Image 1 (cartoon, rainbow, N blue to C red):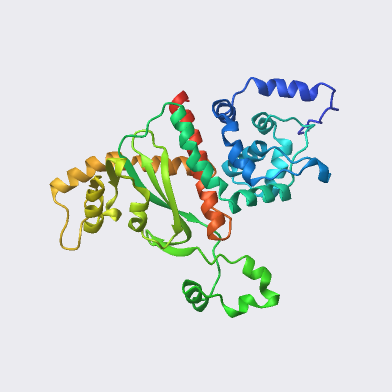
Image 2 (tube, rainbow, N blue to C red):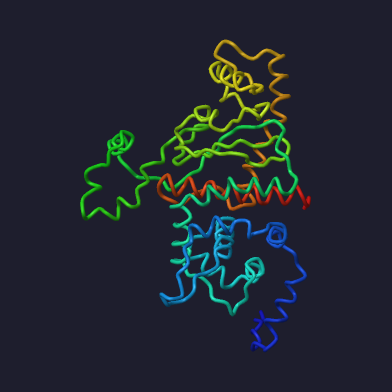
Length: 346
């Protein structure tokens, strides 16, 4: 007969003993928390998160950095606002990362939504991504090696539109039925900025995260977000800088026009050769591509890390502005973890 273990009555010191047991176990969050100076982001966050003054009454607002760190946890674990509210209250390892305990006041899902929306409306997440390079420089990390450019597809919830509706959206119009008073809720749930693309005989709906990665450190230096149907090479020059030195990329970026433009910028064009119909690559070109690909493939490590360790890259936001900011936020979180790994090696 199977015996069931009955829970014992809680003791006064049970919580304390449990916390002490966890104290001896360091997690990746603890290492990140000890490495990053979170006050670095406070001036940028304060501009978007307006505090309520005491003379107006009511509860005091939550600390900006505290809320920012909750968004990081939410992104890493790919949680909704409601699931994040519950996890913040019950996970003790999160409490240690946030610097709180069970007796503290925690934000609800509406507070999380309002704070996140404030950051998006003011493009604060983009500003944090760009400002973080000052922090990288303060750690003595130099980004002066060659650059690798690539793009990855960011999927969003698929829109079940008719072909006629999709044609109207691409022309910048809104289908008349969506603007009817009874369909206002439907219109709010329609992403008219995302688009379709095809890769490896599969169709994807969403956006593209175009990134420039430093060859040596694998840090994301710059990024551009576009709808998924925009070709990779259309935003290449927006990512590059004359000081980049050498560019590594796959054959999708192969173009005589691009090569001429990069030569004017003083950038060496180390892009893989492309085979054409009835004109296969020579053995010399294959050897050259293999040499280039050993470096170019390092960008795949970046995307692999974001998929496996940082909550993936699927987005549940609607609209270009929200998705662009949250994609940029994901790039920032990756840079935080990558910088810690470079400096600490664990």
